[in-house]
Amino acid sequence: MRVVLAEDLFLLRDGLTRTLREHGCEVVAVDNGPSLLRALLDAGDTAPDVAVVDVRLPPTFTDEGLQAALEARRRRPGLPVLVLSQYVEPLYANELLATGEGAVGYLLKDRVTNTEQFVDSVRRVAAGGTVMDPQVISRLLTRGDARGTIGGLTPRERDVLELMAEGRSNAAIAHTLHISESAVAKHIASILTKLRIGPSADDNRRVLAVLAYLRQ
Image (cartoon, rainbow, N blue to C red; front, side):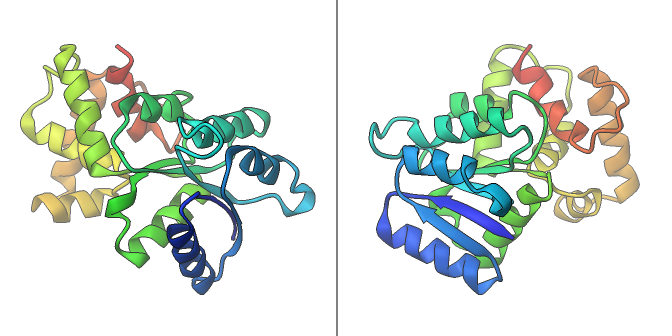
């Protein structure tokens, strides 16, 4: 798996690079927005399988990394992007998720402490999945609730929805909540019905359940 890693802090960049290489990844590491965009677009036959991107990169230290990744994704639709951020920034999370196409992730830096979890998240996004940090999902759900968009969901359905948005399987949700997989399936069916998410062959339909009420 080929990874473009964009992080301006040397120690974190070096640590993540070592971790990914130890798990068999080829890594191109950059430390600013323009270099990131070039690495994502000028790779030719060695195009990356996934970009791991800090939101705030030189030269502006605002949202340079995210904007470079979004621009690359516009030019190369479906390019997998996993964003790393110091803070929960709902606006950036919404912008990243706006297309509903999947192959995206948003993790908080200070929670990237488990090597296996981090590498699994990178691989999941590279394979077209969606990975969201639980704190990010919690903030997005709270914002949605303030607009009255999830008032019809039960507390248990909200629990299931948060875990769905983290990319958990039905089995993993059942294990976490100590309920049966059939109960999980019933909760998901109810959530999709209440949020008016119709049948689709898209594997990211579960994540669209979160996006639907964020946009209402």
